[in-house]
Image (cartoon, rainbow over all chains, first blue to last red; front, side):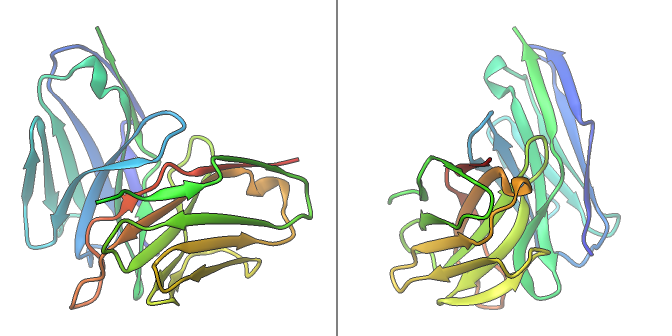
Length: 113
Length: 116
């Protein structure tokens, strides 16, 4: 059974800092990994999808890396802004022929103005 | 291109009742997935539908059932509601890839279900 762990559970940093969020998964037989953002009480917004054949994916100030063999992914946020405050979730396919996603519990990020 | 929509936004039911939640997929997507998110937790996969058939299910009992319609809209039905069913229910639509698996999943805003 696929399990996803995200570290840290919460993070509070001053505006302007670069930061790294970590995600690990137990079954490396994945075909992609997604990072999402969730604002309080809202749905999820897809940030980045990395295919298993890729090692990195970039969108604006966000960069996600994937090391499939070690079961790890990182989300790098450059020059953080107060608007980046949200919960960040990573997700991988559940496996076993099903295409649903298994999520971590997320990292709750607060960027202090 | 329209996004994923869900209805209703909020719903209050009592224990033992039945509920139907609705989802309209993003234009062009042929796969819909449903998730349950308890407070402070990540979403948990309930099931997925592709071409109107269930295509994978998480660890949820049979009283959680679904339908996908030819226009790719979808319903989640929950029978015999329990207090622990109180959660945010999310649907996500995506495009099933030729070799299996799905591309980026796009989520709706969710339905907040409270069971009293």
